[in-house]
Length: 449
Ligand code: NDP
Ligand code: 2IT
Image (tube, rainbow, N blue to C red; front, side):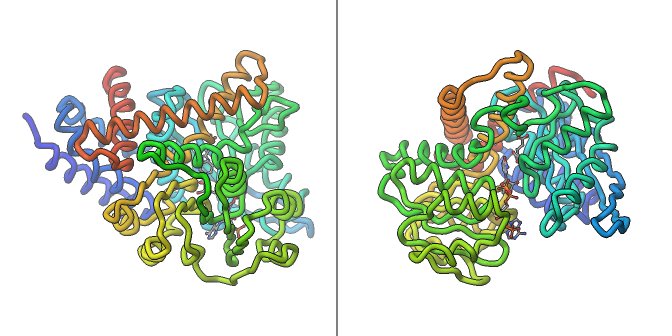
């Protein structure tokens, strides 16, 4: 019995909507992929025949657990922990942990689903997974964060190891948290298994350039999109949202390549600095002092802080949304277009709403979706796994070169798929199709499991 790709896709859509009706972020991520797959399924009827998609949208395993911990006043606090092991056809589940009050199953599933395609695009043989907790690290002492991480790992440790599932950081999880998590894993298992987490400290198995990789990679991706049309980063102003790990290193790379990043933001508002963001000051405030973005303007005469408001109102030719999902909506896209935007590369996961993506693409803006543009972080995590397995350590330049080459390859594979499936330059179609074909083929090869 042969079913048309369109009929197959609507049947899958109905099934997912029925099963996950209360998971809006997950449904958004699934819709965004399914909407682009008709040409792939026309070329590969075997993917329809094997019902790959219905398997792909259902996580292989979902773990939800209680995380009790003691705060500094000795009160018992309880959070919810998650690990969604989405797809392991290409390798061990790989993906970050997010600690943020907005975390719920829908958010973790959307992130895990995206991760499958992103990881496939890196060609590093890693499956897709994601985890986290509704724990809010903001305002917590180091000791509280440590006790929380220890409790979180006291459950998670039984589900992960270097061949099974390898978590890393995401929002609210950086070097400090990975250290505490690793310490507890080591204590519980009695093994120093470097490959079980990535983003570790450089003295105990962490890879050079992992900290910088996502932000640098997003800028490399934008550079590749621009290079195709004979353009570049140099001399252009960039609007960056967020002021965390991804944003900071996107800003740093824009500036290294001769551009000028003039904004940064957090959930309280944004700063504009017409002189270009002083990235060392930003690191001091955000990475060392864990302060708020307004403090940047307090300490930098050329900058002003705008409380609330939308960073996309600031004109610039390049835009890097690097904060969180759905932060760039239709109004934001219109504002960017009004400000003369030429290229948008997503440092964050799903930061641009579908309506905003459509507006930008219709206007001819180069648009790099997160699955491709922010793949540098997880790709460098895979390089960390490689180094850990070989008990090896690469220097900074060699590691950055590898990252750069991977981002070039991700760009080229994405562009090639956009051509093959009929819309050259549509990187959304390209990233979804190229990622999907790789995973679908592996799933067919491995049978119905
Ligand atoms: P960080 O925790 O280091 O920084 C997050 C930044 O985004 C902060 O400035 C934060 O501001 C802001 N932010 C977070 N949530 C919200 C919100 N609901 N509303 C407004 N601002 C918000 O996280 P990362 O930089 O690591 O992650 C940023 C994005 O990049 C996420 O989408 C993540 O999934 C994605 N990503 C991260 C990778 C990595 O390697 N770290 C790899 C690939 C993608 P505030 O402090 O006020 O909350
Ligand atoms: O969204 C992402 O790709 C990440 N948070 C990084 C995951 C990883 O395993 O490095």
